[in-house]
Image (cartoon, rainbow, N blue to C red; front, side, top):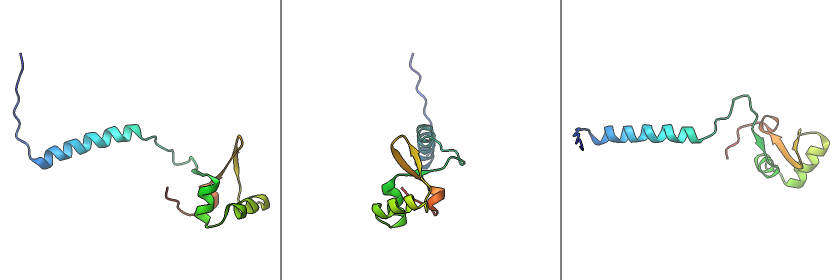
Length: 88
């Protein structure tokens, strides 16, 4: 037996419900970053943020001006070491 339910709702009420459901689902899919976890930048991102070339970034790294984090053969720079806000 099929039941039919009629509900009167405004368009804004329906939009609000759909928006809430979508926001909840999207938040479940996006990995949450802990506040104490540092954000790491690649060499290209760090050079772009500092507005310098890759050879200059390499020189500064060798001189110890900018600390580097190595994961395997890859090189990363902590955002906190670079300073400032960075938008991806």
